[in-house]
Length: 279
Image (cartoon, rainbow, N blue to C red):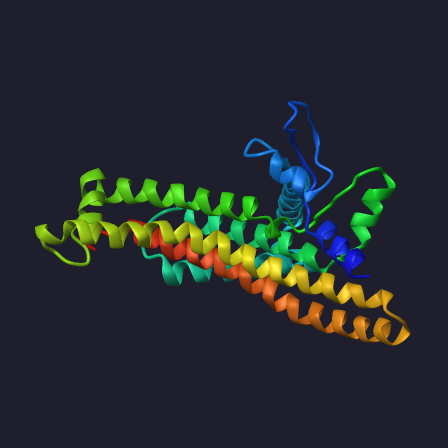
């Protein structure tokens, strides 16, 4: 039972990975060991597929809301979309004090997209993987935000914007001056300042990507562990059902909060990138 339990957990935590095998051939990995042996040029097809799918859902739903929008009595979809847009817009205005038309749409995109990726965690863990098996797909992880490649890619995209706006608003020399003369405004403290500020700078994408990954991975693991109870007898089946329902209700708060934190930290970091000594 221990072996089958370990295999069950490992199977649900393994991505559908495509890449080059050590023997030079290309194809899908059939285990976590094969996937790790493929190296950097491999791709987690399920993570890419579900992240793109949820992104398309976001685009289609919001476009539909824009098409049917009316100045009269709004429908349910329009109400929901307007509430989300107004909430993110108010949050952005309360944090970001500068003029930049990109920030609010970026925060909205991040919040909704991350929320939809996280929302897939509420789908029972066996449903989609078992359906995938029926069509010959060996592995299927549906929660893209449990893949560090996805969360860190999003975090690094934000990091590129942080560097861009830091240099644009402060100038290249101003950016270097910020790294060299903070927090101690002394020439002799430049090495210490640079180390401290560089660590602070690098910590921004790490805090974005790893926080989201860690929380969602832990949540997915709990769902998997609860699912193990369904095969342990009638009493554990009922108890597992109650636990799964309770954790799903609580997890709604987690998936929403993690999407909100990612969006808010993005706004905060970009606001810091716009700060100048004259402000």
